Amino acid sequence: MDPVEQVGGIAPVLQIKARRNAGWLTWKRTEVDCRPALYGEAGTGPLVLFLHGWGLDHKAYKRALSRLVTAGVHVLAPALPGFGGTAALPREVASLARYGDWVAEFLRTLGEGQPTLVMGHSFGGGVAIKLAHDHPEQVRALVLINSIGGSAWAHSGSTLRSMAERPLWDWGIHFPADLLPMRQARRVLPVIVAEALPNLLRDPRAFWNAAGLVRRADLTAELDDLRRRQVPVVVLWGTRDRLITRDSFEDMCKALGQPHVITVPGTHSWLLADPDAFGEIMTNVLDVVRMAGGASGVVEAV
Image (cartoon, rainbow, N blue to C red; front, side):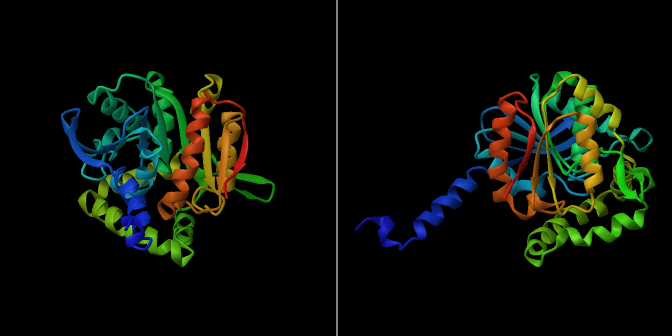
């Protein structure tokens, strides 16, 4: 009897798991500026650099990135300074620009001299913007996923208030909503506990310094420069995201001119909650990037 028939449908499930496991990243260690740096790597093909969000690190995205690897790309996912065991930036020089400088040096350390596709989630998106602005030779295209950088926070009557005006408590009250519904909380909360808590305990100063950079981030000038240079940019945003508000998202798109925009029915951490959806969407995003920033427009993912 055929072995596949014999196991009564278990084999197809195992085959699916095997394909996903084939994309798992290998965790590695190097030195950047003579200081330890950790990163994940997997896959073959065009290089994709992925930069993680605030409080997390490269390992938090392992399921989402494994889907990206199976799309046929070579993924590098560093733990940014101060997270995941990578040495923090010196406090006196810590800034989004210096994070961008660090990423550029990381790529040079690994011998990656060609322009690459850079993806950044949340805080990592802000770092990606600074990298593309300050080190244009390193970046051929950007994918910004629920990214910081837009200057707007919210409308108050007819007045548009800036992100710099947003109080800390407003960030705090919207964070729990990012874990809802409960099905998503069961997926996202363990990741946050497993990765963010050790990062906080390992280096609380770097943890909160980076939070300050997130709160104050206004990259309008950099985004406008990327528009003038016609850097291909894809912007993804979850329609239930209350950390990166709709006003902030729209302000980013306005500064970029006419980027390719994809909205998804998710919260700030949608790619952690649904890595399969992330993989499907990224397949389409890679096609857009291959067209070197072809036709603009908004795509609603379902």
